[in-house]
Image (cartoon, rainbow, N blue to C red; front, side, top):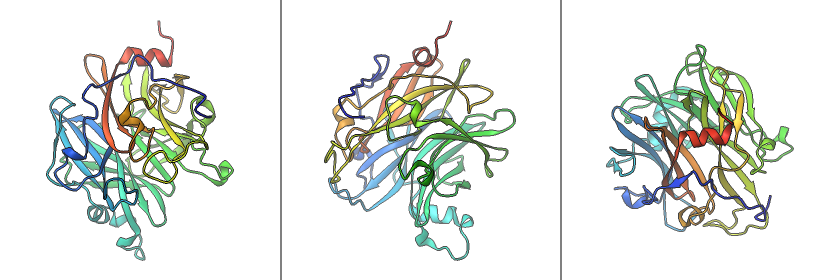
Length: 343
């Protein structure tokens, strides 16, 4: 796929006029790239856990990564906590039981890309964990966003995990994006899979949900993004879709960046969430605004949070250009109609 295949964001999607709604300038400690946040509504307020990559502005060799916390009464204007809530040192401590005796603190490089799901009265955070022996997806539980109990770490390589907000037929359910290379002819042609668990610790029953080849606006990889929301017609969920064009050159801070990240939307069966019952054949969102097209990596949209309000408005929180955090809104019925023809 090249840029001659032009796509546009769906007209039902509205970017918030105050975008970006969270940037490095809002953070009271060293921050450079503030993006890919997990956002949910918990204990009477909007909660945002964001990824913060810090270092020298414009230099692709960043110093480190931590997770920060912001809260809001309206989901638009945020108050950022005075210090990071999960640093590399915290991650090393909280994941110690998942590593054998020969492992040491140098095994863990960083944790990032949080995704938040409230189940009953607790909040669960999926995250990606870079280690020296592979990329692992994890699940942690918290009630205060300062103490995290890590429940599960996958085997390498797996990431982009998102939890469903309730048990389905007695099982917890998640979407994930394993990263097979040998079985994909040494290509990064990755797909969306699912698994289930009785206790959030041990996961199995892996099933394919959506293949790259089924998405007309992707030729490189797809994967989960924001955790699903429940509607009467099915589980509404977003996914990221990546197209690669070798004619793209230096699109950002790095020497070369050939990818574009767009957003897709699909509907999963309420009782069997591994079953896709509808999907828009065109992207929901593509990079169009300056804050989406220019940054650390140009032309990147990555939703990490989706909140269905009682009014029917859907708030979509997304990282833009791997640099800032943004907000878009849509009516839930419009999103459903993009997936299936309803009566």
